[in-house]
Amino acid sequence: MHFIGPRPERKVFVDKLNEITPYYNIRHLIKPGITGWAQVKYKYGENLEDSIRKLEYDLYYIKSRSIALDLRIIFKTFTTILFSRGV
Image 1: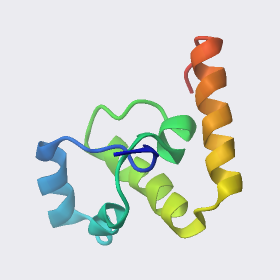
Image 2 (image 1 turned 135 degrees about the horizontal axis):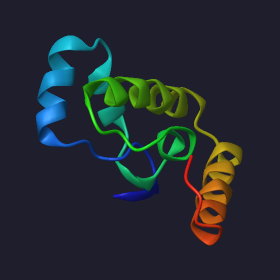
Image 3 (image 1 turned 180 degrees about the vertical axis):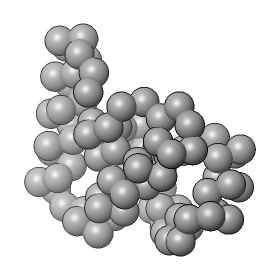
């Protein structure tokens, strides 16, 4: 597991999303992370619709991976923790 990358999804959602969502398996091309673009840009995913929305952020991260984006994610993660605020 890396520090930055798509968060691992619950097995129940993975099976369902593989069936109904094109490109879902692309998010498994890179190792999962503790924090990621979807975590700093979207609320906690409680249902299938939230997981689909977060997939959009994960695919953006995979497509746009860079040191600059990783630094933005780290900064946003730490400020969220320090100031106790979520998205």
